[in-house]
Length: 292
Image (cartoon, rainbow, N blue to C red; front, side, top):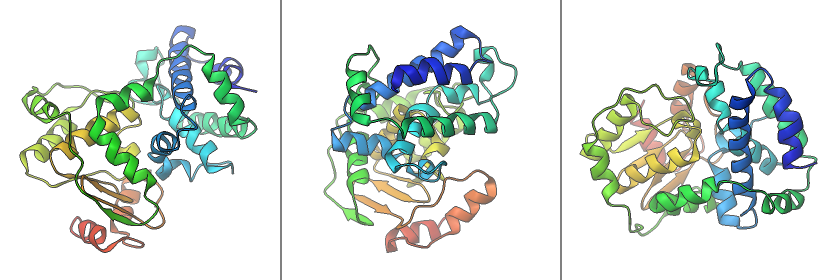
């Protein structure tokens, strides 16, 4: 059992309704993500940080499996180009309707069943011999401030940490974004582009109109890890905070909910999550109180 067997046999079969050349794009993206992550699996900070952004979803996935197996499946499969096929942009792959929620659930559940039987040491060895794009490695080089602060967030075992601000290197990012004209795009959960709503919200952050950029959960922003870093870089460079119902992340302060809430699936979930003040440090609690 291994990466190539999973991709060739199980995943290709599950995506058989998609034409081969488009199916191969999805499979190749997943292969790149798996190999990029597995190539640094023994680097604890790297692994914990890439997997950390999946916690609000992965830790609630079924079937029962070790946490890192579920995180691995969400990071490399669910948070891949598979999202395009499950979105309003599915016609990019010449399919008329998005893959159903049931189909996506089946793919992820089957992947968890498969990879919980694998030895990750064997997967790492297989990845070393494969040709792949280092997706995560390339992303963290682009957004060093976001990566540095996210490492601290993933590593922090307590509920709060106040630290000396990290010096940002990518100081041109905020200025360049603020000068970009708005471009009408319809973004799925994978696209690296910014739609007009996101551009407007980030514009409000940059201009100082708002101090907090709030989304219910990481996947509520995007499933693409590089885009998470990009948005976080802009927010941190602006001296503002990125907040979900579980995390308060700024350059100088990190706070976490004691027991994380599941990522929302509906407007009601989002409303319930932001009103839930259980297990929050004092400062984080005051932030969410001010949003209700």
